Length: 436
Image 1 (cartoon, helix red, strand yellow):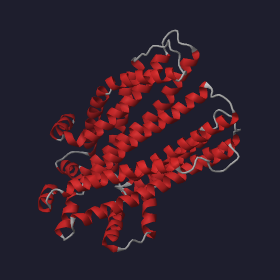
Image 2 (cartoon, helix red, strand yellow):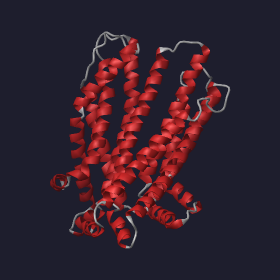
Image 3 (tube, one colour):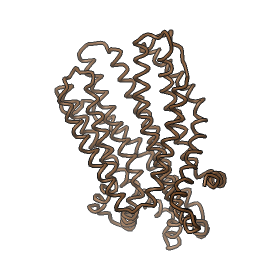
Image 4 (cartoon, helix red, strand yellow):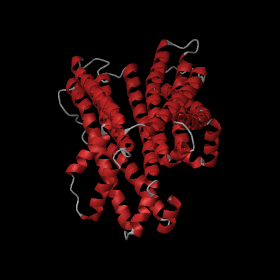
């Protein structure tokens, strides 16, 4: 099956570009920040610089590991779903489910290994630039020299390969399991994340306004709540569709299409919810903390500078990964509908009507994801603001939320419409033949 996996990659390299890109970005981020740990382990570095570098490596490295898994999992899930006919043909030819799993996992590991190797050079350059930024801000001594050692290399290769293998195994397993069993596991994990998130958010009130760890509880609570809502994304979308009333053929068809594809769109909604919740909560809480420090007339400590740097870095990583996940998922999902669009055109629909239907579907998805993510973010922002200041809501206004919303909307709408426009350039009769 390994030989078959290699032949599959050679015959269809374009199918694996999304996985390669996710693995490349993930390995680059992991190795970039974990190289700071190699630098911190050098002999003769002062304790303050070593603590700054170690904290950055551990916190961002942990986020990077989680995001690598989500990014690779989303691309592989779409890949496996689109290959359902191919996998079914192999099963009819005598292949066992275990052999199919080994084939898909072998493909994912081979692509991830290539992506991780290609990421070594950019990771070295990124780590050196990141160390320079720490030096310029006074968080690390000027005498510290950069080091890219075995910790960065081993963690980058190991985490990327393990995440890819695990994501591929889960993707092909989901494709062969029953929907009822899969739904029960997803529901259990969703409610577990929601309950843990509520506990973490509530724990915020146990801290005082000057505690250094005040931001940790609401931040992690918002993340867990967003994960819970993301796992419940198909149910949230169905609930919205049951209460949504749109007039005209475009609105009716958009709602009908979304009802038929709620499970397939779960990955897109998950990306939107996570992006909105984590970005909004982190940026608002950091803004509240910065204004509170300014109002007190105190100078930021090294720990406060480290926390601010980490927060903005984490948000930057999330933006990059979620954009990759959204673009990959939306591009693959829209391209997969080539035959559907061709059938609509042969039935009398114009390209403009098809595009308006896609725009309506994407708008509904975007609104659902943004509202769910905003709800999770507020659950963390409000307790933090109440403890850190005398108010309930941040005084920074809607600027941050509007920026996050604009980025999510631009990426989602832009990818869907551009991909649909590209698909519609193929004549309908030819598209039906190609898709068949």
